[in-house]
Length: 110
Image (cartoon, rainbow, N blue to C red; front, side, top):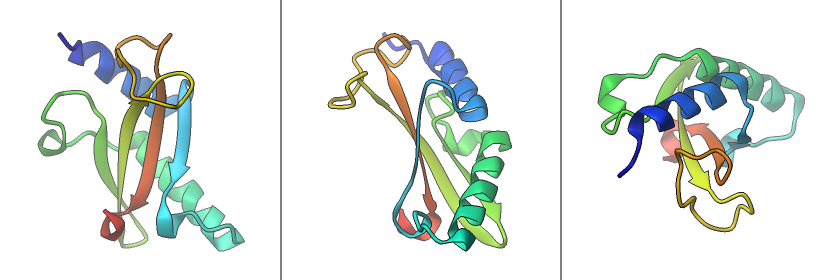
């Protein structure tokens, strides 16, 4: 049985502190120019403080959301991998066997 409450707490902690996983900027947001890095920083800041919308959280795990920055819509999601980053985690509620990955991308890339 999945422990949605513990997973939610771990996801919230990771999203706010960025400790316990990795952040990945996807597709069109993954640029390397200075203007892209500034936008990445601003979007990441918005993701870290964004409230979880009930309609985007059917399992109560706080693993998906959206933010708006400079009039653009961005989505973010958290996935769970084993510590070697090869397979999905056997137990996302156990941080000793799970690496969280926060992916952030333009809504139109979804």
